[in-house]
Image 1 (cartoon, rainbow, N blue to C red):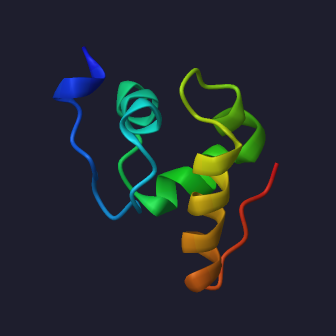
Image 2 (cartoon, rainbow, N blue to C red; image 1 turned 90 degrees about the vertical axis):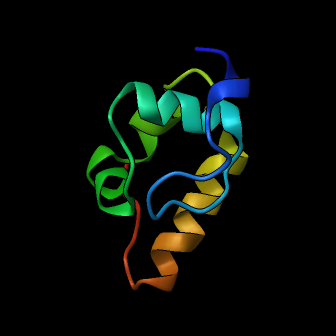
Length: 70
């Protein structure tokens, strides 16, 4: 799937960019709860998910009172 075909935003996730969205969609991750269960190290290991996307996800989780672990 081309990143052109990936939506700019999925589920309740903040806008993190199409390459990161594509990587998450490939693994069936569409919610912040699923991001929380995945963990930072696994997210960073996904092709297309970089430090900026993880920072944005971490901030969205922090706004809900949750912390993204390793």
